[in-house]
Image 1 (cartoon, rainbow over the protein chains, first blue to last red):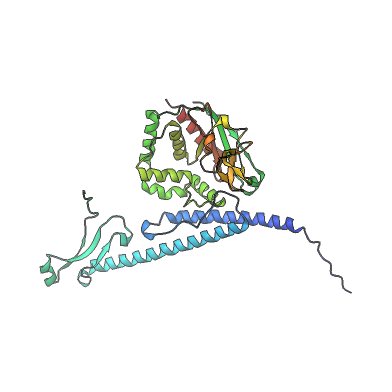
Image 2 (cartoon, one colour):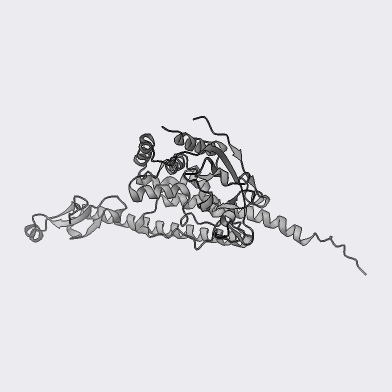
Length: 159
Length: 216
């Protein structure tokens, strides 16, 4: 008969307690890192991105268990990923618009009546780049096209 | 006004173990008269409002003190984008109202300390407290203020408590019977210390509040 030496099993509750405390510390560190990364991205976000920053319903202040911390970490990671995706998509859109503006400026005649707002370019202000005919109808018939930048935000109107 | 004497509060073992860096610091002062703020205090509020611009609201969460409170909020199950950390809530109010509205000397002093340092300070009627303040978890069937008609607290909620009862949920308004009123003689200012914030920043907030309350 072969006797297999068995390690004495550690008391389950002690081992579990030690591991869980360490796991909770690790999760809290990860949560702090995710929060820092989200805060850094918030600077680049604009209301037009319509990003929902909230991570779900929350009760009052309490000690979170391992499962709750895991869910929180996962929610934050998902939120971070979503924000990165939205910002990357906007950056790509703006780059495309900037390239279009360059083409408009080079050859207005091939981009008749195209409009690009400052917001579409990721720039502040209400100006709009617009390809229009010089001298109105005359320019239209003669093929004289130009790019005009409107003067900015409309004035507030009294009621 | 001289620097207030500071007292470290007690922290329940469960909280100390799970949330290292958590602390409570308090300072007892004679209660101010609850009156309209002097001109100097109102001017200080105006100057703070001018100093702040909309773009600051975006970068606020990256600054060390608001960031530390945001992380702590996450750690205790609060979403700082839903339940704003106090300094962000103050700035939001500034944006909505176009300035910091004066609401009396005590509230103005608390606002100035909060906005200048990022550290929230609360005030309680010291004569209604039983022993030093601390932080612990609410027990089964506890009520805010220990009063029969006080708000019921869920077990496990983190509360600011004295020796007998919870006096305020963490980062929330105190029980009605513990607040500073016109009849208050001695007042206890307290601030909650979280990981990532230095003791000096907490002391600065309490000192600034005390100094504003002593303004003529």
